[in-house]
Length: 116
Image (tube, rainbow, N blue to C red; front, side, top):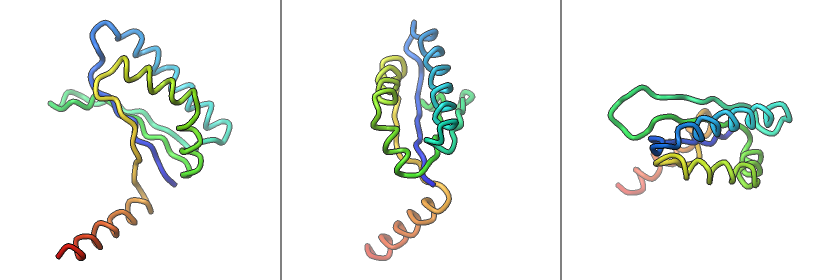
């Protein structure tokens, strides 16, 4: 199992309604992808005020192949472009958990040993 981390910061002033509409569209989109068996799950999160720039994020789960396919489709890319236009610090990156997390920690440990 693999994942994507989709994070965002503050909404640009005056873009609140469009950002909320995009959020609803994205939630519906990922729900559709689950129904079609194209991803295994997703979960959105909003953060309370904490002094940092991150305001919320979403985790999307699936096989590496599923996530690669989805992230290269026009609908995903169009949503990403719209989000970049509406929110500061928007980004998408790999998310490591479960076996992927354990494997990455092993690689890190190996590099620590190699650098010593």
